[in-house]
Image (cartoon, rainbow, N blue to C red; front, side):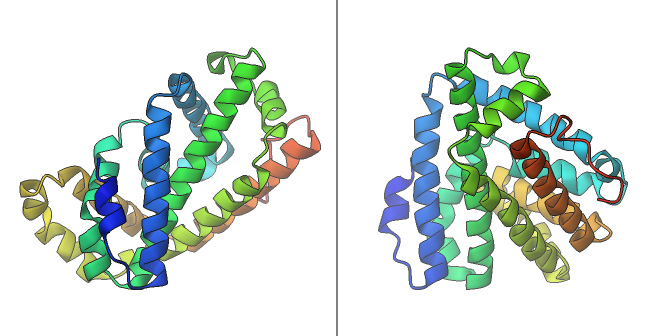
Length: 249
């Protein structure tokens, strides 16, 4: 809907240009995915993977200091359904973002967009692999998932996905420690609603609140990344129980 605005906006830094290109890629992918015959299958696969992540990281997910942050990760950052208006509004305000935001914040936004784009592309690939194998995502088991995973042609993107979780997580943690950001989010709620940006504002406020409540974000991210790298290695190595990890991880 706002593709022309993305294209027409002049960019004056590498960070702004990176964000612009990623938003264009994400915009085009969203249009393609919206009419894909396996769209509903991607939602089921995303749900299956979200439940797997909750099980693998159950100790962190149930920890009162991390639960809100992980819930935000699974329902807001990794949310292939129900975020169309939010994503459209990011495209809509892109000209103001490159005008007013510093490059470090533009880089963080770019990381979030890239993470979401990669995740949804990988989910679509899994849906297509399931379909070509005659497997319904509603009948997905751990063994079937691992078999499909190993046939992926985008393993480098899966490694990139894990790297982005770490990069973006550390960046977001630095920003939320700035109390001025919380004040600005509170003050901008009414103007955002008047401008039709309440969903985008709510997303930002939920993210701010979630990370502010976490005890030790660095520890959380390090454990998530270490565990997910081990899970990926287990799957590729054909480990009989790839999601069961040592207690010290």
